[in-house]
Length: 357
Image 1 (spheres, helix red, strand yellow):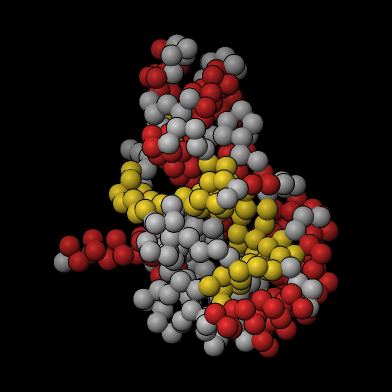
Image 2: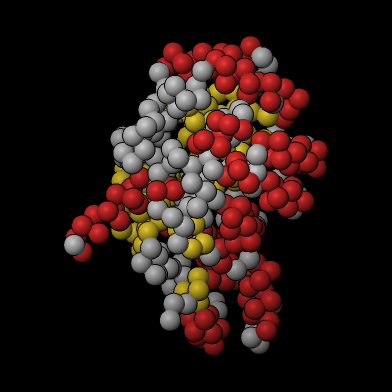
């Protein structure tokens, strides 16, 4: 039987669990120090913890549940990891180097049911949610890699933008945020963490009420319902009007800026007309919004889409700027190593299927 990852417990949950099992409260602080600061890989390495407690932990938890299958390194320093879970499923995690630090993009689900027609993540349907521990462990695996190759470097930023819809795995995702943000652990600042959603409006309200300082990004990708429904089926359940009401609530509740992600697809959503519609849609939110224009990474399974021409990208950008919308074109990472999210995983699964046949 698979044991759960100890990384899945928040500090408060670990403290309660230890007390319930007859251990002293202070053990939680010691265990977290070993896990997140000394970053041990075996319970037996926790030298100041008695054998009874070590045995108790080993009976109920494991430290590692992910196994590295593939590691791809880009010329720009980006590293994409393909991990195998205990049940054999595969997930991706990406380390990106920026001028401001090292950022890790984590996965929250095995596959995705949102069904965006341009996305590699949704090629394979959702198999299951990841546990909080499996999400945290992605950060730890990357940090262990950094500890081995370049001591002193640490993960400083997190984007929850990998495979899956984070708000469709809300509780585990929130536990993950509390673990990585905790000052007694990894202490990654909330303002250095960004969670992206395709637009689950009801969860945006819940996220706003959680009153975290974590950044929110909305995958918008179209400025009107007809076009957005065409490329993102989630828009049928949460059309733009409903989504924007949730966004307004979030802005009023938190007074924090929202990033709107917009993938530019050639001759689909990259015309000046769409730029003007987008500017109008965000006009009353311009002081607390930023549009991240994203050049499309082509996916072989979605041959109907191509990357927008550079001229179209710049026209779109300049149109938004002229209308007073804060925006930028995202710097690309890992274009030489299966850049699209979910692409490496999809390729590996296809290889394994061919091997079986």
